[in-house]
Length: 162
Image 1 (cartoon, one colour):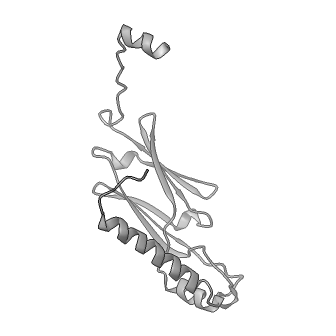
Image 2: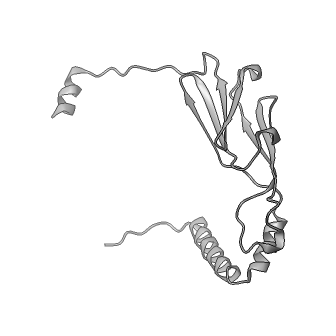
Image 3: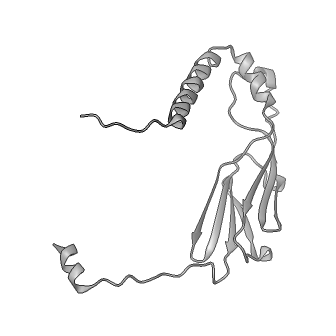
């Protein structure tokens, strides 16, 4: 038995958007490599993948920067924002016209991440290992988090155990 759902115009638009994206992907993927190379050259810079999490009262930020010389990376704090900029240089051994396909981004990049309130920018530590930049940001005590115990009543414990 089918159920009736109210009409949602945005659901229709998302569906059309997916269909149009698929159509464009099929059309443009059949062009020769020369066209792809020209389109890739128009993309300014690139954006490295990042992750952030909190562990033991420290906020950790990691960026994947394979092929980037650590000397070409700059980390700074502007107001309450962590700014990471850098540059990945192109390979000199392969000329641009010799590429068939290229997904790796070259050139300048910049990532801006909001810092939690109260973070002391002077205490941020950065390390670079195996192409990964890791930033350790000590959190103030009030932001480090507090574990809240859960009180379980006797009657509920028996129900859960059954």
